[in-house]
Length: 300
Image 1 (cartoon, rainbow, N blue to C red):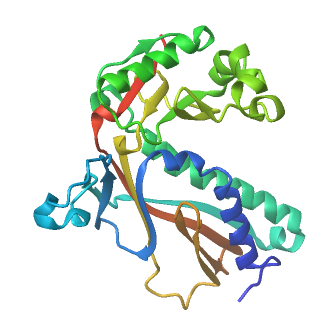
Image 2: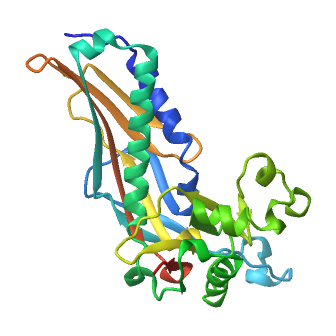
Image 3: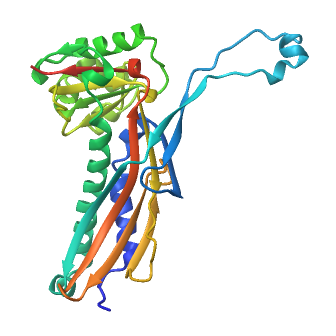
């Protein structure tokens, strides 16, 4: 069997490292990620966590068991694992001979980026007015100010959307003009942190975790930004294991410990074409959950 001059385990770990750097936006959704193996079409119950409430203590509560009352609103939504995607990379014998660790790292960066882009792109494809209701505001990117962000916040408030872990997704241009260009945000003392000054980013604004993206999916409605609580969209992810590992030159199962994001790495060699074939494989599913927990904005 042909060999390749970089280690599968190291290479796949580098891919995981590249993916991990970009996984923060996935925390904005209700999710159930696990390294358990499942098949295409299997269903996962993703928990939707509601708010807990406080009550006055009374020994007589709950038939004399005050410390055993129910609390917190937990429901679930079924997500079907019907999104099965791969990121293919092929390496010829000549490329293998001429490869270096630096070249292998480039492959890892590209593969990791493609992996995240596919998952995030499929999840965010759900964000349409059909799924989440009327458009809150329609305005060109260059014209955005804090007014539009406040409008998204107001709609979530009016819909009684959960206030926990709210997120705001905006293009980098809006972060630059409406947030970093606003003196109330770029002044470190007023902001309460140094991120705006030292790193050129605004991690939180108006009760939102802020995610500034290079590209917002248009989704057929000219989407430009949205605000949400986690339970707006439910996502599930599991491993899809090969039936037979004996014909594979390399196989790894990768899981990000922070988010549970999981995928497989597999490599085989075809002597007829003289190529190694590397595939990253993902099995996941997503669905809109509580539709009132997301407010969207478009551009003209």
